[in-house]
Image (cartoon, rainbow, N blue to C red; front, top):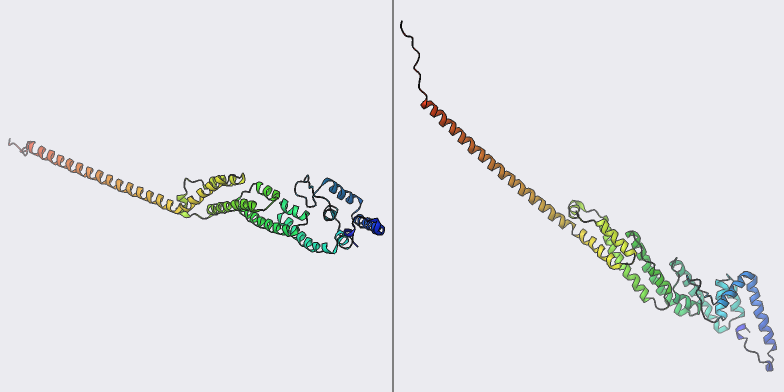
Length: 325
């Protein structure tokens, strides 16, 4: 007989022996656990029982449960709060019925998955729904919730890698939504996916900003403060202003995507202006040269006229002669 077979006594049916066995076996099981973990740890376990502390406690240490303390919850507390390593074997041998022993295999599998989830989550504690299902020994449901939680963490990891490269961070609201989820994790998954999609856009903008723009690209970006715009996107994302973050990121992408065309246009305009200026200068030089040529010709004509006039008007002096004396 195990302790879970120990039912209310019927003293008309020779139940005295069963009662003595039940009390003695209960005492012996508890004593084995106390001998292993010590009196102080057992006091902590009993306080958790009295306070309604969940065996699978979340980030809020003040969290409480109104679940009754049966042998399942007591075993969880003895192990998770008290640190016992032998309690499971004791309960399998002395406490549970044959029908309940199959639960321990399910429990071991679920606990392994829960430990992996806790490790993967790091600072993100397992969601409330997972912790509740584990505490209620609903391991089939817990397995499904753990799988959904792992999917959330995969997205979170991708988001974390993206924001690290971008040089920003995501808000703590995602972690809070994940840890406090008491039901299906679809809404949490969607929230993370939205930010991951936006981070992908921002990542494109950041990589575009770091890329080599070339001569034409650099010319095309003149007047666009890409770094400042990208910093605005980073700040907006970190504070949860996703609309502004997207608008600034797309502005960077559009500017970089159009940098070569803008550069060609600006260079073309500059070349056209230089060409126009060159033509204008040449025309001015020709006009000036033509004006100078006309002036010189007129001056020469005037000089010739004046000279001819002077020659014609001036009296011709007779050649000097010697008068005979």
